[in-house]
Amino acid sequence: MKEKNETMNQIKQQADTQFSAGIYTDAIVEELNAWQKENKVQRLWAHDATLWTDTDESKWMGWLNVTSEKSEVPHIEALANEIKAAGFTDIVLMGMGGSSLCPAMMAKTFGKISDFPRLHILDSTDPAQIRHLEANIDLKKTFFIISSKSGSTLEPNIFKEYFYTRLQTELNTTEASDRFIAITDPDTTLDTMAKNEQFKAIFYGVPSIGGRYSALSNFGMVPSGLMGVNGNEFLQNVEPMQKACSPKTLVKDNPGVVLGVILGICAKHGKDKITLIASPGIHSFGAWLEQLLAESTGKMGKGLIPVDQEPLGDPTVYGDDRVFIYIRLESAPDPEQDRAVHIFEQSGFVVVRLNLSDIMHLGGELFRWEIATDVAGSILGIDPFNQPDVEESKVLTAQLTSLYEKTGKLALPSPFFSEDGMELFTDEKNEHEISKLLVGAPSIAGYLQAHLNRVKKNDYVDLSAFIEMSDEHTTLLQESRVIIRDTKKVATCLGFGPRFLHSTGQDYKGGPNTGVFIQITADHKEDIQVPNHRFTFGLVITAQAQGDFTVLTKRSRRVLRLHLGKDVYGGLQRLRKFLR
Image (cartoon, rainbow, N blue to C red; front, side):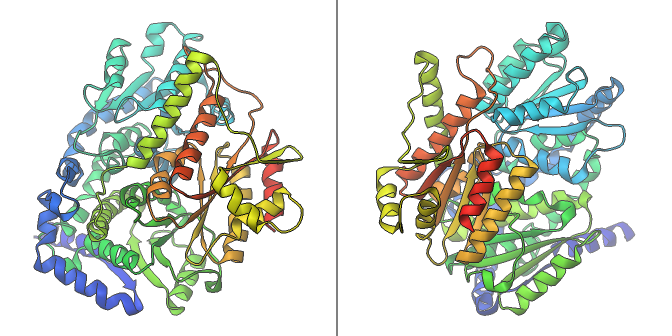
């Protein structure tokens, strides 16, 4: 009986969703009553596709029972102990999107655990990023994970070719193969390759779980277990949230449904900029959440726009399109965030408070948001499981790289303006609109100002940077986005390519046409050849940027590319100066 009471208290603690929504409270309560009256929670758990668009949604609901994955934990632990005993100091996970964002969050949240190897994530084709990673590992003491649900994703496959070839220069083929494992769905090309090359192990995904919903499956739990996270305890702590989100709970007390209804109703009333505030100990949670929200809801001209890692500002710099979500780590809260969120509430903004007791309960928060995203998707009338615009960008990138394989040439557009080693690119329509707003003689600063003068109330500005994701670059770009936010009073987003293409990129192309985009590219000081291919990693990221740019212009997005040239850091400093 005591154990039962403890479980119920844990459910109550995790189910607590506090919010202040002002004039939208009645609409939220009305929607919650409708979900109760129409048995919509039961229908969600029954995989009823009519809750969304009545297409193939029922095929993608396997994540609801994901704690059944606990049966995999002993195999993960056995491999983890073997890797630790063998003296490996580092593990590199090579993946994109749903295959990398949860492991990246776990690596940053838990850090280096006792005697286990440190987990690194490679999800960028930028040559400088790859060289930086390689400089921080001992190749002979590093274990590699190739993670791809489809098994055919370009980036992890060429990462594998590079590091497998590098290892073969240090070890024999058999030893090199023994340093690799694969995480993929059954019968994929990666599955076949891993078997043919005799990888040490293959862990399988569940075909009914889509990539961005796979955090609590092998795609998230294998890397976490190998870096030393206790998988049994982590998954066991998900169960109270599963129960709290089940049909057995009244809708008004259901933490996932309440959150989803708030998000959906607010979005229908124009409050679609979901501004994430997470305690410092879980600051990387937002990168995982960005993909879940953006890729799931951003389509058919609708969607939630997640705003992650935007520095906190005075209430006067925010528009009325914001919803603030405060995910507070109760074991290590930030007093400055507490004060800021209180001020936002007092200023009349919609604020949602979610409390997380400690980092070992992070899995429950993942599950809460998966439920909430599906509920919001139902209210918005979209399919939360597809990603049509992400696929189009992938196709265009593949076409460009395939053409280079055949011809040795990559057809790229010409800049419409150049100045001191920096170049500007856009399509004919955008160039015409920007030029109409240009004040004075043409200059990089003038064109940037003209482009940003296209920003309207309740728009957002996105900086898409196809450069190395270093601390120095991030700091400069963060400063630039704050200048834009404070000047234009609009939400700002920052993403590094190609990472964001497998995440927020869907929202930017398929969601509401309220984004103003500055795409940032640069030359590569030292490129890296991709083994067994004619192209380099530098060419791949160039093709990815062009594919992204092409789809944005096809969707009539307001976009301008700024090419920094060879001095990336200096170029970012100049960008900040231009914005000021």
